[in-house]
Amino acid sequence: MNQPSLDFLKRLMSTISPSGFEGQATGVWLKEAEGFADRAYADQHGNAYAVVGAGGGPRVMLAGHIDEIGLMITYIDEQGYLYFSPIGGWDPQILQGQRVWIRTKTGQITGVIGKKPIHLLKEEERTKALKIEDLWIDVGAKDKAEAAELVSIGDPAVLAYGFESLRNELAVARGFDDKCGAFVVLEAARLLAKLQPQAEIYAVATSQEEIGLRGARTSAYNVDPQVGLAVDVGFASDFPTMGEQKKRLGDVSLGQGPMIARGANVNPLIFDLLLETAGAEKIPHQIVPAPRGTGTDANAIQLSRAGVATGLISIPNRYMHSPCELVSLADLENAAKLIAHTVVRIGPESDFVLAG
Image (tube, rainbow, N blue to C red; front, side, top):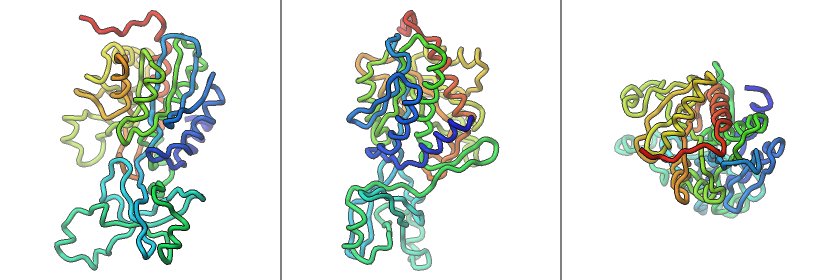
């Protein structure tokens, strides 16, 4: 990955952007888009847009959600301990003993998630699955009054992990689901700005995917695209314990290219075009089954208005919905390249109507 793009990715990953609080991340994304897009703007729902090829046709929407899972402060007790609820889907076992960053009205503060030490648990307690209501956040406050000066009810928090590079072009971070998708669609738009597409492209960093595909619904209605390509993360199966899962999810490895979904959520002609493009441009890729509607922005886009010819490209991801999500930088690059070269093949004469 070239250094400017890598620097952009790092800036994006360093933001705190749980669903409903995407502003920091969309600000970084829009500033990057302003460097090459015909137009870059946001809407009142928190979606961000970058337009390339303005005035062309048909309209093509590229969507990657910019929100991440997080926590929300819900209660402060008399001793100054903070209680919280999840934003998005969490495995509660991950949360114990973690440090958190809380975004407050005066800036970011650090806290720790506490629980009773294992030494003090009764035997029957040790065998029970941990629940979020058994946990709290300690910010070092002496009492409720001091804690309330620092933190407000409704403040968002994330686990305190940033971006780090690993061997073999791999990277680890909190929130690759799906800030890496928002990164990919903007990188694809950047490539398209140089390729002179016939289509009018709307790259969209969608909001609130983790709580119900909400931003994709509103932005797809707004753009009214004829073609939509969503980018999300997908389950890699190249790590221990995933043997049986391969029979259902497919055999997916990091570094072997983006995942191209095939099934009910995907227009077959869009799938064929993605596959044809990958072959012609020698882009590594992996095909995965999608026998029903997916839990991605592709689902919301496909069902917008009278229906949109939709495709789904996913980035193989290890350890999803943890603070240590692992992806391949090469897969990100190849996903952007696949999208850009596919969209270049779409023009006013393109027909994705399904008949026969």
